[in-house]
Length: 364
Image (cartoon, rainbow, N blue to C red; front, side):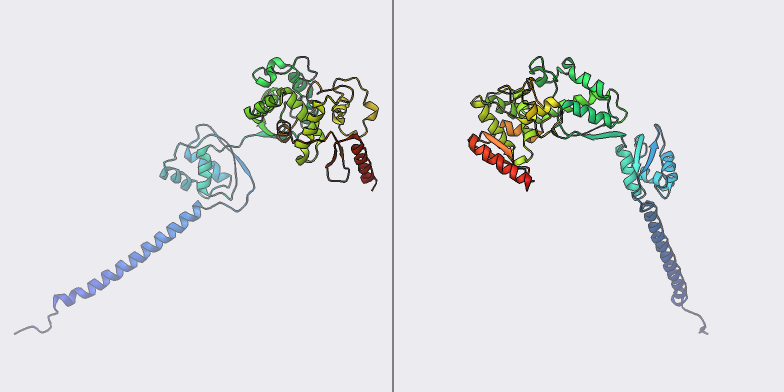
């Protein structure tokens, strides 16, 4: 007789399959949750340790291991996890590629950004930054640097006066002999940066300023000076006068042209700035008491150009002399109306009228 209580095998398997499926889903969800949590955790460890941009100086010693660097960063509060940092380097095959040195970092950098700086060797350099503006004479440059504690003024001037040290520069070799201040006008005005621990700063600074002049005074400018029939030294000399006379940049080529017009008819340059240079004081407006000073730099007393530059001309003044603006003007006088511009005149009578207008401007 058939046993009606017997359950088919297919029906017996169904509960087991359901249980297995449920277990699988639970495990899958748990694994997914763990993976999700793990990914979130990892992202958190890679994120910046804080939001402050405050600079933090750390030093990576020579021969430091990845673990050692990780500890340095963690103790400085720059990363969240030193172990993650170590495994990050290994994962991207950067282990052993960190460069020694001092680094300026901050909490706001991510772990990958910090690692990138350390591997590239983006080290912090202890530097001194200084700016030499256009129009300073050499002694003024030395005093400015000395006041900032960068150089010894007397040593700076002594080195600048010794042309035997600077014969590598073509423009030095071309300078006329017997100059009172040989490098006057050739220490190019610019912003410079040197290492704070640099030795022989005076010599180094003179060298980099001469090198900058060499870069600025191009071969094209040398050809331009030759086309004008003047030497490079004469071009620099006239540019230094233009630098001091032309306050408004747009007038530099026109003022340079006026001086060329005067030179062309052998008329004295009559530049107040050259007398100011003799006095070593460019703030003096009324130079009439000093117009008979016997210095060869006095362009009221002597025709032609003075022996050398009276200040450090910038690029614009040099270019103005090499490519002057043509005109029939022979005279100019400051308007004194706050515009930093000049009145220009073709005749002396017109110049006198302009001078009266300038005086009226001052009195208003």
